[in-house]
Amino acid sequence: MEKIIKYFQDKGFKIEDKFLKHLESGADITEIDEYKHDFGIFPPHHNESWYFNFIDRQNDVFLVSRLSMEMHEKKSRILFILIIDGKANAYFKEIPLDSMPDNWEFNKRLKYYCIKPMKQWKVKFEDRKYSLDVTYDAIYPVFNFNSARDPTVLLEEFGLEILDVAAQQHYEQAMKVTGTLTMKKTGETRNINCHGHRDHSYGTRDWIHIDGWNWAAAKFENNEYISLSRVEVFGKIFVNGFIATKEGNIPIKNVEVTTKTRDDGKTPVASEFIVTDINGKKRTITTNTLHSIHLPLPSEKGTTDIYEQIAIFKSDGKEGDGISEYLISTRDT
Image 1 (spheres, helix red, strand yellow):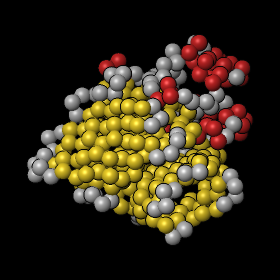
Image 2 (tube, one colour):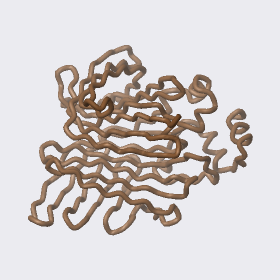
Image 3 (cartoon, one colour):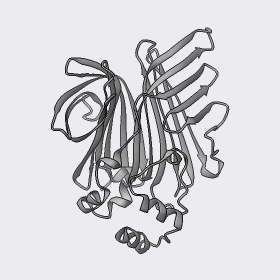
Image 4 (cartoon, one colour):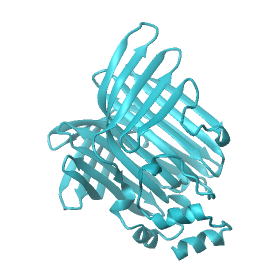
C-alpha cells in the first residue's frame, strides 16, 4: 500500500480519503460497487465502464453495448450495436461527463437501470426503427476477477507501471435475458429469451499500451458458463477467468490461444482456446464467427483495434453461444 501511495504522489497526485479507502478495500466488492465511483482524484486513462451483450440465435438478434466514463478526460462514451437479421444498427454518442446522468437515463433513445444490484438490470433502446426492452437476470453470482489472484503478486510481476496501464477492478456475470424487440415499420414483435453477459470495470486502462488480449464469454447447453481473458502487457501474459456452474465458480489459471484470421492478418474468423482451471482440468474450446464488429480506437500514439466476434462455441461435444473479443495495438514508432 505504501509503495502504491508513494508511486501516485511522485506523479503529483494528492491521495484523498475516498481513493485511499478504495485502495485499502483491496479486491473486495459490495453492492455499492455497481454504481459510479467517485475517488476524488482520477489519474490519466482512468475509465469506468458497464458492458452488456445478448445472443439470440433463434430470433437472429444480437446486442453489444458499452457505456464508459473517462474521468480524467471528463467525457462519457456510449456504444450500442443491435444486429438484426444480419444487419448492424449502431448508436454512438459522446457527451461531457458533467452531463452524464447518475441514473444512466441518457436520453429518450437509450436507458440503463440497475434494478437489483448484482442480480437484475434493465436496458431500453428506441429509435425510429426499433424498440428494445430487455431485462437481465443473474444466472450465477458475480465473479470478481481480482479475487482469483493476489493484486500484490501482480504488482510484483508487472511492476508499479501497471497502475498506469491496466489496473482494473473487474467483475462479470452470466445473465438470462428476456423482453421484446419491436420492428416499428411492420409492427412485428420478437420475444427475446436467451442468455447474455454483463461486466463492470473501473480503474486505469490505457488501450494503446495493452499489446493485445483475448476475452471470451459463452454459455453452453448444460448451463455451464465460461469466461476467460488472456492479456499481454509489457511483454508478459496475464490470464484470468472462471467456469460457472450451479456448484459455483472455478477460476481459470491458463489459456492458450490459436486464431485463424482473414487475409488482412487481423480480423478473426475462428479460434481455439485450450483452457486449464485451478484444479488442473483442461478443455478445448473452439469458436466460429457469425458476426464481426470492428471497433478501432485511434490515439496520438497509434491505433488499437478491437474485434467483437459473435460466435458459435464448441467444447466437449457441447455447443454454446457467446462473444469472442480480440484486441491488437499498433503503436507509432
